[in-house]
Length: 236
Image (cartoon, rainbow, N blue to C red; front, side):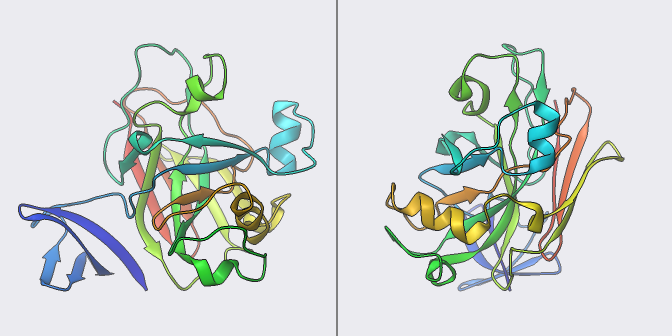
């Protein structure tokens, strides 16, 4: 099942997404007519794992981490599907990266690998936008609008063997499968849960395959994960 959120004149509504319509408790809402899609969750934090594909390590000349290597994006980094990525004035090297994301269903802490599916509501997609010429991960990755998220949450999905691809203005830039991760999705959620208490709606991103690259105003970034769909954002 796909769960989506829509901004209506009466406020946000959430429900099952079916063919452009959201079935909420108080009625049906047509995306584009009754409102636009919101990000599918409201995380208190976006927990992001980097350096999680061997091909990416080779490309970027990084050493292989012994444990998941992570950083955090704040809630203000989140924008929705089809919402524009605003090119910041402080960078001349903005990059994309297509990532799979788990969305937490209920508060949890210190959960085992086997327990992870019980606490994950489902999966969505993130574009880890990066101002690559800035110093330090917070400056590079945690600015406003650096975390496009969506378009919805797919609740019935095994994340461990999914094909993905990223297209920029119609050109294929990334293509991989989640089985190529160095640390698997369940392993990462369990690992981070020993350090943080997750809240409902929190998001955990599992890293980008090889070939993250630069984007310019006018580009359209489309990130597709098998079983979920496509996150699309234009750069302005």
